[in-house]
Amino acid sequence: MSKITMNLENLGLGNLSGMDIYAKQDRYLSKQSSGSDDDFDNKVAFKEKDFLLDKTIQCPVCGKKFKTKIVNPDIIKYDEPDEDLRPRYKGVDPLKYDAIVCTNCGYAALSMFFNSITSTYSKVIRDSISANFVNTFKDEDTYSYEDAVLRHKLVLLNAVMKRAKDSEKAYTCLKISWLLREQALTVSRSDMGVGTKLYELKKEEIEFMAKAYEGFVNACNSEVFPICGMDKPTCMFMMAQMARMIGKRKESIKLVNDLLKHRSINEKIKSKALDLKKSLEE
Ligand SMILES: [Zn+2]
Image: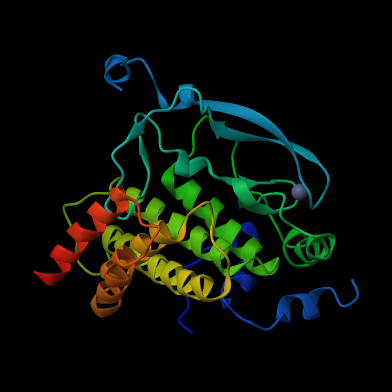
């Protein structure tokens, strides 16, 4: 299996970075725990931190309470998503704040999955992650993309350790890919050659998207929809876009054709799927 770039050394977790995300055997458990709008556009005064709230959460792994940043759902406004349905909002990118990290023990998860952990796997997290975790996260007013990517990579490591469903791991990989896409916009575009920061970020974006695609293929074959809050047609459309972006054109075409025959497809996804089909045939 191809390794992906995790860069978790500064958190004390470098030795766990070369993992197989979708490994079927329960090697971590057996090894670690034997037995155990327009108006809105005109409001120029909004800064990113104005969209954020501090929320106190209790960690299901170590039991301690900690504060995390969340985006105030009452004031954010939708914008047009990217072609692969990466969500966009005006004035803030909530994706950066979707990884909840307990800086006491190193347990981390996407907000929708934060409490999805059993006592058995809490122990696995304590033994494998908390025992080595070094908190280097700073309590800043806002997160940089670099920081958000690191937080999401810690989420991915935790998801592997707690034997999360493939859909949860795939969705985490997709979010990392989306964050890397945005981080790439923050670096100089004057030099795009091999080895430059921009090159590495774009390469990493595709690596994580490929991992996301692999996991969603597994999930489609073994899990019941909705998965990660998505119905099957929406997921199939995203997979078709992912396949196209990672160079799997034939798989993308097959997914779009299957999607267009799906009886539950809504008009919005159908229209996007027809556009994608057209672009794939050009
Ligand atoms: Zn904790």
